Image (tube, rainbow, N blue to C red; front, side):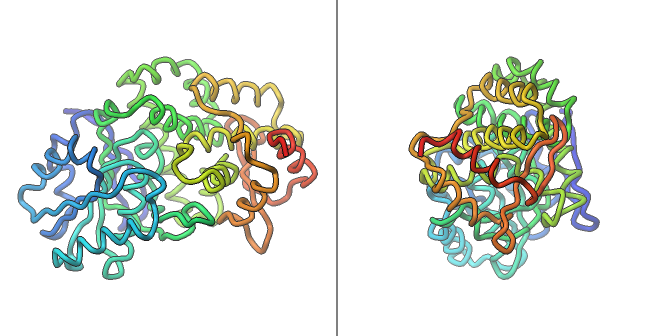
Length: 362
């Protein structure tokens, strides 16, 4: 069985991202990265029913326990995180154990944070089962939970030992989740690779139809871009912040609306449309490119405006709590052109206000 592999280059902490079909049927891809005997699989009930047996069968030479978390962004919190710690401690897991995240971004982020924290750090592996997780959240070592006042505000950088992106798991996604994942795929074209953006314009119908060849290429190219960025800026001191295009606006939407009301990719899509609008007002991005970007998001079936109830005051309150705010100064990811984004706090705040007024009724 053939598959592609992208490597995150972090010296002695480097790790592979395996991408392809039927990877859960290749136990060695997992077991070669497990250093101890004890393994805790973290998942939810639905995914455990779908893929749990395949994973536990692959780990038959190990002592395996499974903990199931409640499903949904609204449960990505410290209370649910404690379910993992309870399971680890009850089963007597030691510092040589390995955690495996079997699920989407919520499961992956929480498992990684538990691994970073349990006995001050244990190994973990990622088996992402959503498109968004395969192209973004499972790669790069960002882990954490949400707080009522802000998304992903409690967490740690903790790299997995490998990522196993079995594209067959995408068959269990509903259409909304698939489209939400495509928001993150499109992001890579916006920020770094204009040729990839053009490829997405030409191949979007195939992606929406779940064509396996198109999906495999989109996942591989997304991971290649993220791998290069993370390898050069692991803890987001500079270039890695580019990966957050649309996220500062988008996180405000998620926090203000209530976690789970909007899928993460949906909020990112609307946030990206807002970032493009501001980029045009600053005379950086041309309006033709903005239209091109918005049209691709709309063709995907993603929202390009925030919830009607959100006010400009809501946006400002939540955005000022964003992790990219430094000394009270908001940093945004904005676009110079398709394929070139920048991180900056040096933007005209009147233009920022105009963008908020354009998208908000109040």
